[in-house]
Image (tube, rainbow, N blue to C red; front, side, top):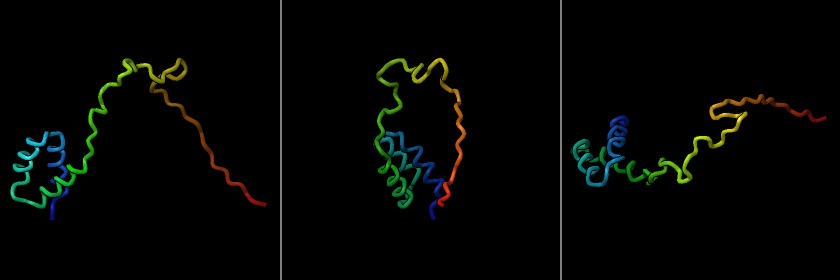
Length: 89
């Protein structure tokens, strides 16, 4: 039985590497354990190519985005919700 934490550890180490580095990394961390390598490679293949979605937006300065005088960013606005059940006659 394969240790899931080991699969996760190897996956997290390999996910940010390019293809050549990834192959070397898997060789050194999976060794001769073909099942372990297969499972890690399956996870890597399923990992979507997310690109650079965390880069700053093109629009420039967004520090005051959504902020108003009465509702600064970080302000918590709470509303009380109540559940009512209508009784049929």
